[in-house]
Structures are given as C-alpha cells and as structure tokens.
Amino acid sequence: MGPGSIRGEDKHMRRMLVLFALLGTLLVVAVPASAITDGELDGNGHPYVGLMLAKSAAGEPLWRCSGTLMSERVFLTAGHCTEAPAAGIEIFFAPGPIQVDPNYVSVARGGSGCANTAVTGYPCHGDVGGTPYTHPQYDPNAFYRFDLGVVVLDRPHPMAAYGALPQQDVLDRLKTKRGTQDVTFTAVGYGLQKAFPDAASWKTQADRVRMVAHPRLIQINTGFTGDGSLLLSNNASTGGTCFGDSGGPNFVGASNVVAGVTSFGLNGTCGGTGGVYRVDRADDLGWLSTFGLAP
Image (tube, helix red, strand yellow):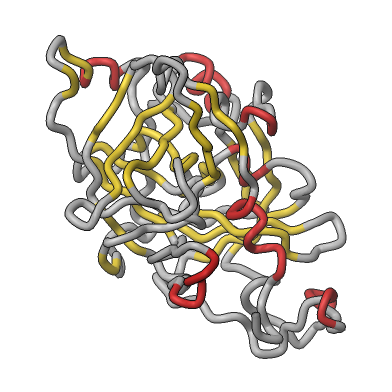
C-alpha cells in the first residue's frame, strides 16, 4: 500500500456476511462485490457509469463503488455503498485509469488527507459530489435483501444519455418451466480486474478503470435468489463482477435498462457466479420514484 493509497477502499472487499439459502442445508458466504473480471475496456461505451467514492462526515475517503447516472441529478448504486458512516459522495466519470492525486496522503499515514488544498483530484474531488440515501428497508446485517442506494447530486450533471429503470416485475418472464431463458446482461464497473487468495494477493489487479463484461443468467426466482436477486455467470468466457463493482449496473442485453445493481459474490476470488440486486420490484421502483425516477 503506497503513500497515496486509501486505506478504507477495501472495507466492502473484506466484510464477510453469512447468507442462509433454501437450497437444502447449503451455507454460502456472501461478499459485497467490487469489479469486472475477464472483461474488456469500456472506453466511452457507457459514459453515464461512474466510480463513486464515499466520504466520512469529516470529508475523508471511506470506500469506493460503481453506479449509474439515471438523470442529471440522480445516481443509482447499491445500499451497502451508501450506508453509514458515508456522509458525502464524490463521483468520477472518466473511463480511467483514475489515478490518486500525487498530493494526497491519508490521515492514517500522517498526511492531511482531503484537508490538503493542493489535492484537486481523486479521492477528494470528483466531477460532481452528492448526498447518499439508502433504501429504507436496508439492513447491513442482511445487506443483499434491499441492497439499493442513490446519490442526489449537488448540481446537475447533464449527459447525452442516462441509464433507465425496468418495468415492474419484467424480469420474471426470464424464468421458464425448463429453467432460465438464454439471456445475456452487460455488467459495467470500476472494480478489481482479477482477485486472488491472500497468499497470492500480490497478483490482484485493481486499476480504477471502467470495464465491461457480458455475463449470462444462471438463476432467477429460485430458493437461493428469492424474488429479489439474480445470479449471473462469472467466468473466463462471459466475464463477471468482483470487488469494487458493487452498485454498478447490469443492463438487460445491450440496452441502457438497469436490471439490477451488482450486490455480492459467493467467494473471495470473484469466481463462479455474481449476485445482482433486482430493481424491478414494486417497493424499489416506488422508493426510486421519490427521487423523480420512473421506468
């Protein structure tokens, strides 16, 4: 960890929660997710997808996530990205790599952190700032159940295009009598490109760059996912999500419709499958409507 690194960035990478599924007696560890694996550079493919940096009440960086600008004032992300003690948010829309400002030295390492007026870039000052809000039913001890958050921007940030919400319950049609339809999603985020166990952590790739992958639907409306989540593929063929992609969009096909936000992984190396919190349910759409968003 270099002198300009942010100690709090891996808070959501390391938090481990136990998720009891209804698949027999299976016990699964659900880990808040962070980054695109086996994907490719997004470039300007999704300019309305940004990297968000949560800050404390004192203005110091806590952790980073991804998310989608849904209007010129509303940014959609995961609930575990906006939860306390996050008091403010900085959002960066550059495709990256987004470099740490060379003048930044964290308070924990003896520097003045974001109080240093010479710091004008990451992690202290983004393209736009905002205030975080978390789904009213969100519970940090069961974050995957209502894992939805928004950031209301301090000022308008107009773009040529934005993300869009799905119609209510539209994803239910992906479930068939034979299982699931052959559906591909487009996952976008700024998380880790590769994750390894602690013994090989030196090989972890964590560039702050916007990446894209095309995972396939694995499970929907099962005992494991319930009616609020999706499981998508995460492998070398389709790519997937990892630490740092939390809150990032999973678009339906090649559209700009956000089926859900990246929520959790089932292991510490981001392999196998990735968990997505659906945003097509009535309670989610109802809450998002209070911020002026509608399908």
